[in-house]
Image (cartoon, rainbow, N blue to C red; front, side, top):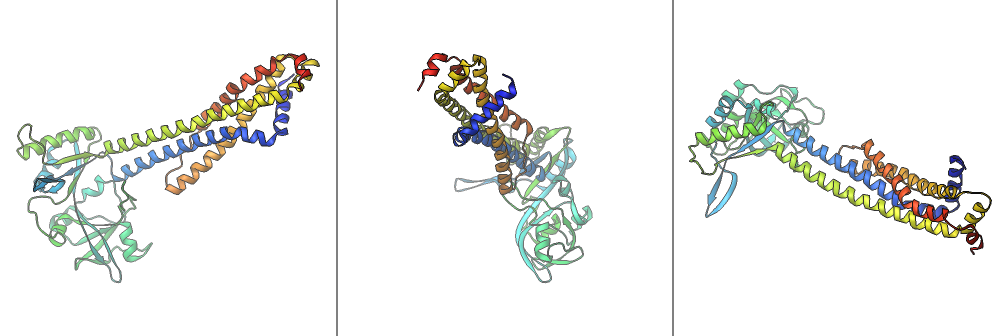
Length: 410
């Protein structure tokens, strides 16, 4: 008996019991679909994490001031000013592993245009901030070093603020806004940045020169101390670990900290945070994919059970076929092809279902859809292996039936 004849008999047998065939393949369909969907969603989640951290800047370090203590309770890093403007200048000029550094002084206040107002975050910084954060200006230009030094009353609007004050698609460059009743000329609109890992809208921000912020927006002067944080971009060749070590050594020397004394500042490496987030996502994805793979095994057991029932129901048919000349290997091939066809059809349907579910979830969570062809091939291969593995025993049992006993079977 040739392969095509065997396949034709197998398909005819499966079609004869449509409901049972569909229910038998259901475990394989769910298993393959779940594996493909979970792996795709996991890859999309990791890509989303990477995209979010990349949007914050590359080779990025964040320097936070020290911790305050009141009544025995510590306020955490950033609650006490310990880093000075001279420290910032030293980091820029004395640390070879640092490419650029910029402060971020932040305050929430109302910003008013001619006919609209919007409460947003006002950030005081320097021109290097846009390089450190990999943040281009979409319209107009950013303020210059001269603007930062003399405290010019100019502003760069985030995309969200520009839309709220002037409407979608408007060009606000040259318009005047008021921050705490002080007029500022809009000189640019920053490119769209998106959200932070905790859901903060990066684009809901107004950028002004740091010295202007200290004079016009900051409620109280801290003198030589920086009231916010410092973003540092490490040289690509040195890497963030080297830059962090060099900055730590410099600040400890400048703050005259004794050996063994704790730092009065904190440096955070965003690449480590991103790696940790991706590792957690990958672990969860592997766990979900493993659970989904179990359903494939359950589907295989279902195939074996149904094939055993089929052998029992078709015992007389097997006896007739052997009596008219069918060899044991022909019987073995027929039942094995039935199991393989059932699992492969289930796998194909499951693959289509998995891609559809992955696309739906990616759209729901606004993650990139990453369906890997190798995962689909692996899932289909595994479903074929399940069909052969769990169909082999029933097929062997059918091929070893005694033809006389089979013909007498009622």
